[in-house]
Image 1 (cartoon, rainbow, N blue to C red):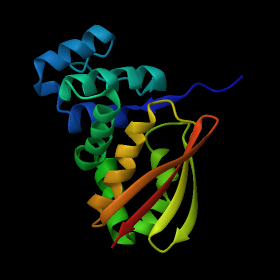
Image 2: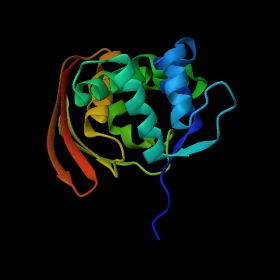
Image 3: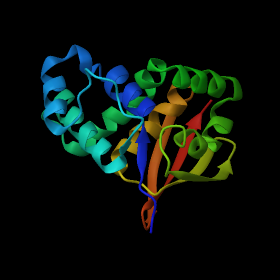
Image 4: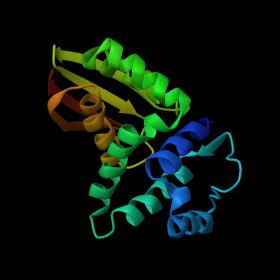
Length: 183
């Protein structure tokens, strides 16, 4: 039997409380509560990944109304990195360490970093050139566009520019991207 996939509390804290500021938005807070997530009480240590992404979808539609769902989820992925990392102690530590080692080395550890927030995503990295990597992540539970937003923003907050994230292929529940940037 396959183990259940969970997102850890710090992922909820960083994304919904930090990046999306759900506690300061009464309407979003009510939508999440109606869906089964009460952000006014102590969070559980972990949530089933499918349930977590249901909450993320609610937040994405609320924050980016009128946008196609893939675009809204991509924006939420970007916010998860840009503002979510700063919202937790572990996130701030990961961000500072990543800045010290640089874009290429940080992205080469991307799968390991994802494991700080859940119990299921593995990462495989192949170096294509000094400023280009192939990243395989999976198994993915949420929409691919969410992860693309994360992959676009990670190099940016580390100082890269001209970032290109291209979906190359799917392999079962895994997805593969080419990530290129300029230092």
